[in-house]
Length: 247
Image (tube, rainbow, N blue to C red; front, side, top):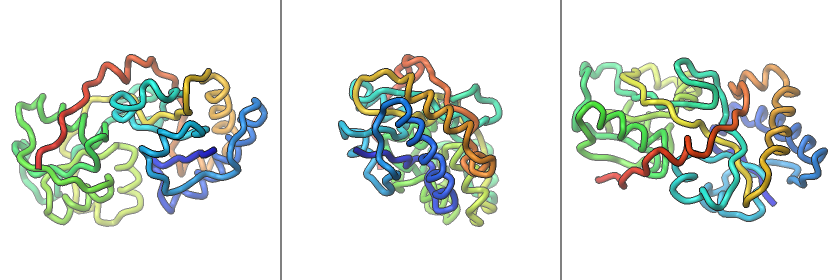
């Protein structure tokens, strides 16, 4: 069996994730749910979400609705208390270089982390379409961090970055001083906790909520996690599945 929290993991917050998992592990055990003693780091996410022994993980809502909607159970969306978003929702910030004077970004070079990223590809595409434009070319970087670097280094003009990730980048990456936020996408369901198969999510949600309440204030601040919010399944499935990016 396996558990992994890959979506916001960094060296600076690994200890907080581990402390959170220790409490979750015990809370799951108290509810008769077996779980591994430690989190697995570095697991390929598509392989992770496909495993029948996945006890707990996090998933982006685009791979959920595109691939895994009938294979896993959603437990609840992570609530990070983002301004102008309802509990359990997030959005992407659209970033450009600080010295780029444009206020309208039409037919630009766009950096995306992955074609199955809701925050890095789907919602930015909708943001551009709502403004009557699109992306002239795209480069696939593999991560939000790499997309932000591509813009900072002039290899791309624009990128859409998960707002929670952007807060972490501003906190821990000096190069972000050379970037600016030029817009926000519409909100959508945030990164969500999930487990394998079709099961009752209630004991998992209770374990997560109890563990978060028991987590030390410093670790909660590091994770910037305010709560876990169950959202209607239709909130995920009503969003489009975007076309693959052109190069």
